[in-house]
Length: 246
Picture (cartoon, rainbow, N blue to C red):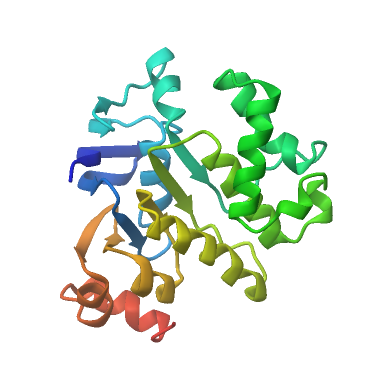
């Protein structure tokens, strides 16, 4: 396996606050890495740095063999190959589902309407929403909107998918449908980095769990190692606070 993501000594500050403190992390091709840890640990910032949404103050990030630069055409080219799904669904409310999925394909990848719509329908079937292609986002549940957002990200044929708390804005009964789509992606070999508090998902799907605290990596290992037998004080404290969830 080769590393899709390589972070070396990555540092990120917001003013006097150091949010990422010399972080080293590699994600191998086809690997599912789940980031857990207390609020403010730097998990979401790490994802945003990998995607180029935030610049870094030190260190290097390499994605799919290409070093991430701060701006310019090279950054835009690389970001096309990174899919990102946020807490909020960020769908265009004035566009139908199929148009939400085809717009970037046409504008960025240069696909024809026919090509883009064929890809969109294929992905809507994959996330179980074929019957919703002509619906507007306001007519969908939160879980359905998030599944459309996943389909939109996949439409760009990414080499890497980043998920930032993708179920945190959903009602509990809708969480499962989104996690199932993510499980399917993992089984298909998609390289994924997931920030989540869904410990059951982490146990069942992650190849590796990374516990972050205070802007760094407190410990990492298999789900069993980190979730059942944490070795760090921060890991034990965080999992005790969760109260054995999941």
